[in-house]
Image (tube, rainbow, N blue to C red; front, side, top):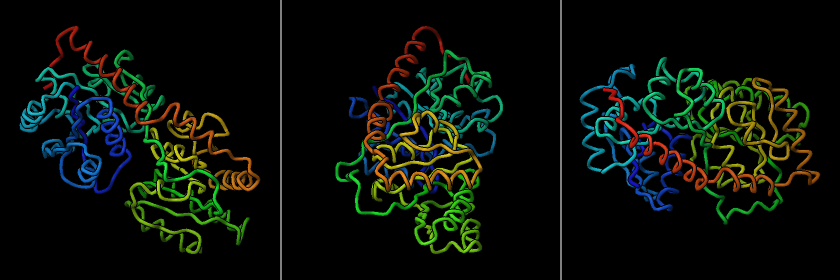
Length: 371
């Protein structure tokens, strides 16, 4: 099956980018012919090249204005040419910014279109869920996102739940406990919704409790609030225990598996970083957002804390450090759960069933024109 994955680029690798690459790679291994289409060269196109995934750029994917609707005619025609040249059998869009142009082009060509809702509830422009859900097939990466789209008017019959998936951990990275005192890791865009300030405050509490035995917090990412978080760290006197390392794609595959991932976010859909940690048996402490409670379904898999609570985050890290020290944490449980539910191949298998449903729906009757 020839699939065109449509997404938009940022100045850094996003969770959506990693999912597009993981899905395309798994689909290729299943005999598909995937290609990635984005709006400009950058980190995503470089990453596709490293994974051997064909990639093409189309500037018309991003509209000239902030309005997502109606689609822009010039962009639609350009995409029609691009989809035709690729002989697309399915157009799979991962970007709400590009959705109007991509789906209008696919619709005119009578090619089934699928949209993956990667965002958190409330992120879609007004009316978008109903328009897309009525005419096309939607994949939700979280159950909370599925419920949100239903309330926004998307027909339940056109909605499908497909959680994120990641590659299995590299055999070169052992999960056997090493002679390594666990440190904390936070990976993500440095903005308010990621809760970096909560992590900083939790570190202030941990240093008060543990003093010289306090673990370090290594923060990987860049973003609009980076300067603020750095200043906050300095004002609280935490420069010796909190380090900012910038954006480093694939960092979880390189750091010790005995470190602890913290996810203090205020909002998430299905955080990929949790699955990346899970695949290596890395302990996780995360706030109760999006799909996290589903991922860490059992306390043995990880600790879930309330949103916006630095004390609860510090308590959970404290308790987990004690469990690790006493040998009460079993990384193999996390690895087994990842292999059972959250591999890239599982994601590709579930997505293939959605494609089959979209193709059947397409063959059953004419597709509504959208622009």
